[in-house]
Length: 233
Image 1 (cartoon, one colour):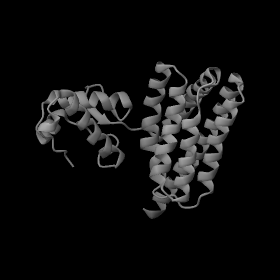
Image 2 (spheres, rainbow, N blue to C red):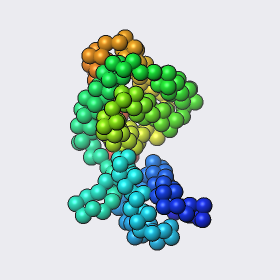
Image 3 (cartoon, rainbow, N blue to C red):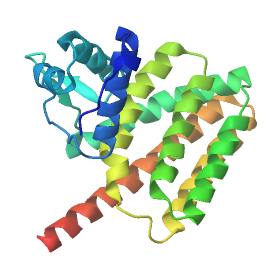
Image 4 (spheres, one colour):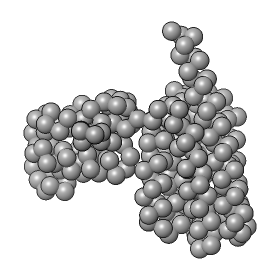
């Protein structure tokens, strides 16, 4: 649903941030689906703003991984072909392994990550799938930020946001049985434990292995969902 921009959003900065926020919510809620074009002129007319404001908002979403541009430079909601998921995880494993090494070397504060794991556990207790994945994503983004390398953080954000948005979050409609989620929590706790051991090389290796586990888990989930969809069809 289009947002109403009023006089409170007169500054160009506030306008682009507000538009980006609404489009982001529409993507996460599935109102804008992967591959759907976002036509600047159409949205500018709907919202009663300059086309340049829409373009600026799309630049924000592109930097976050929600939007991609094709050869014609037209913006579309990002999408991840299922056959590319293993490739995403291969790159993710290498980059997050490096992040774990850097975090270990810096002896960074992990208290915020401990809290996110606790929040994930609470989400399982409440059967709140959206809250679980929101904390899950934030855990990995926070780990990257603690590495102290802004280039690494930017690269991982562009990788993780679409991966969670278009693949991981959409593999389940509800939480159901808790065994899978408690195993996931145990893996996140293991990431923190190995970092606290203080050996950067071991942290990098072990986090890479844990990400391989996540890759296998998501592969199983997506196959289950595909089979379920075929049976319903």
